[in-house]
Image 1 (spheres, rainbow, N blue to C red):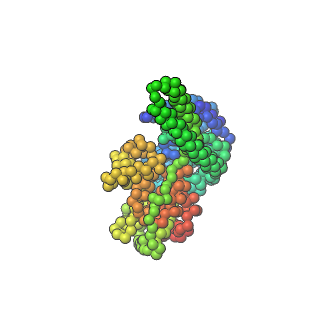
Image 2 (cartoon, one colour):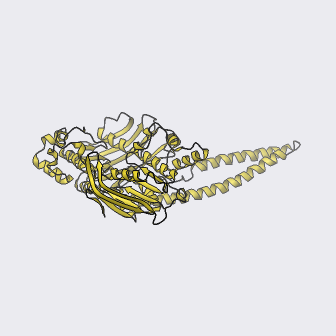
Image 3 (cartoon, rainbow, N blue to C red):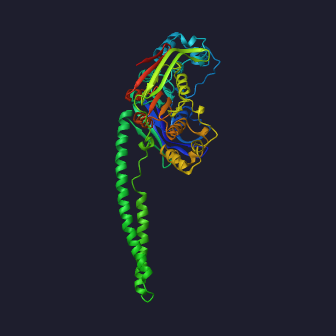
Length: 508
């Protein structure tokens, strides 16, 4: 059993409290999913649980973490290997691999879906697909005979087949697991409990919610609670406005009487002073009541439909005709005989295995469209550094024409995407992956483009933010060509799905 009691975590850089007085236990076959927006302390919590009683260098911690006799295996976000390593060299950096019997290795591979021959391969680790890497890392963790798993974003950058493998692993490993994931499908299928980390009041106050339910049940209950809170907030606000109007009339009446009373009438003057004292007392009482008002609910982010007003493409208009005899990455041929035709406000989604060349194909499409004068095309790359200058702030990056009107507009957009005033002025290099994704989405919106090229747009968004983007894509009246592994996006959209293979694009 893992026991966490009254745990408070504070970031050293700005002394911001990330998590306040957190308590929970993990045991049996619990699969606890930790969710929340970027920067709310998910990865820091997982690292601290693995390192305790040591503490990561960038934070302060108070409370207790107890995992007596537990062997915790931790899968960090980052791949921990050198590109020059062969698969076999990488495996030998794990003592558990060197000590494992063939039977132990076979059992671990069966659980993770990895070929047992793969661990002896001399192929460079850098050449493995994202799915092969996650299978290999999980296999090596299981060889250590852990009694508990802590996994930080194991679903990142996995293709659809690898996501299915990870899902199967989580459902059948028979160990207590804490995991962070942005993949809603994975959360729906695997999570038995939810720990939701939030930052409210302009990211100044942390809040956590522990729910011993499935993800769908928690999400539905939270939505109902937010709607009730929104109703109470507006009811309190209406009552406050009516009360303040009545109070203002009383206050103005007393002030007018005081200004009009004659010095020859001291008795009336004394009565009016008492009345004004009562008015001030009433004002203080109302201030105390206001502090008890229902707060406006803390939601993720919202997109105003008016931001897309007037953006469209006529039905039947030619957007793309692409014929590629070969799709290459350097000297390597990724695919042959690619033929792609896109017309009008079509929504086209491209899927495929890791390493199939989807990003390379999207770049080819961007090149083919860049000189079109009859279309306004914009591109969101998978690697945000391709477009975002790290030394600029979000405001500097978005403020392209120097006008006050644009400055006002972009600040409204940043605020709607939950950027604080401080984050609007931070260098982009200091933003999290999710914040960079949102910044690029704002950039797309401000471009007023009618053709969007998107490479894994939901990959760094929290499971509570991603639905907002999916709704945006479905309501967009322009053309979308999107590479994605988001299973909920693929199952909800009305357009075409094409799989990129070594023999071209195949309809799904």
